[in-house]
Length: 233
Image (cartoon, rainbow, N blue to C red):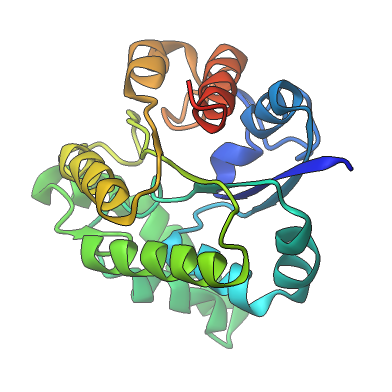
C-alpha cells in the first residue's frame, strides 16, 4: 500500500528562491521529505496561511478530511511561520480589503497598506502578530485533537517557525517568542517539533530577496529534517 505524507502549510511549502512553483516540484521540502519517506505527497497550502487557515482547511475542505487525511501515513503541520510575522495593523483590516465592493477603493487600500507596512513595522516594531500566539496554540491543538480522534495512530509533527529577514517585515522581535512557544506547545501536546533554526538562519542571505522564502539548498535540508523526524532520528 502506497504511503502518503500530508502537509498543511503556507507558501514555504510551494515557493522557491525565485517564484511560486508547482507543489509537485521535486526540489520543494515536502517532496524531498516524501522521497526519503517513500511516500506520495499531498500539499494543502496557500500564501500567508496561519494555523487558523490550516484548521479551516482540515475541517471545511472535503478533499482534505475526506481524501487526504484518511490515506495519510504522516501529517506535517507546516504552519506557524506566517502567524509570527509582525504587522502594524490588526490582521482583520488586511483580510477585509478583498471584500470592499469598489475595485478602485480596494486597489487603493491594498497598495496603501503595502506601501506603509514596512515603515510602520520598523518604527513601532510591529505591535501585532498576524495571529496572536494564544490563537496559534489553540488552533494547532484543535487540529491535533481532531486528527487523533479520527486517526489515533497517525504520526504528526510540527514544523518550527522559521527565521526571516527582509524589507517588508523589518522587525524580527516576534520570532524568538514564537519559536519558544512552538517548542512549549509541542512538548505539551506530545508532538515532535522539526527544528529548522540552524538550517535556515545561516543561509538567509542565499534565499529569496524577500528574506522569507528559501533557496533550494534550504528546501533540501528542511525536507531531510522532516523525514528524519518522522523516522525517529
